[in-house]
Length: 202
Image (tube, rainbow, N blue to C red; front, side, top):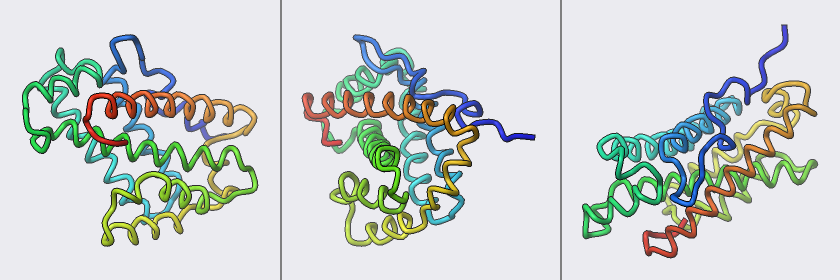
């Protein structure tokens, strides 16, 4: 009996996250981000728990704010504006800080998978090391960097990872690419929102 494809087992893909002129739907975005964490589960190495825990912790902080302010925080854009309205000082904006770190984690993931999808001869450990150096590394201190580099080294081989997404590959890869493109578009959009409004850097 064949295994179901990964993208058939998740409850929400980034492809399904509504993006309108008002912004990115918060609830759908958080659900899609939770499902992204499951991809690291396919890596099959406990070293990646540091990445999973980081992303999950920030999802939970953003969701706590969203549930307390469901109308005002219906989109990521309105969530940020409402957090700013509630907290004059930037250091008090827990939801904004959590969303910033969540988006950084998503950017890292998107970069790693994009490198790997585009360069078919490259192993995941190489792709994700490049992604780390192009995203999260500059925000991490000397204590955290070695932990993440250890996780990068623990990436599975391509030949092990891609079959875990499901078979046949000619059906799975287009789904992966569509999911990845939708994720990249959201990260790019929110990076601009953060920059334009002085919320921080993604």
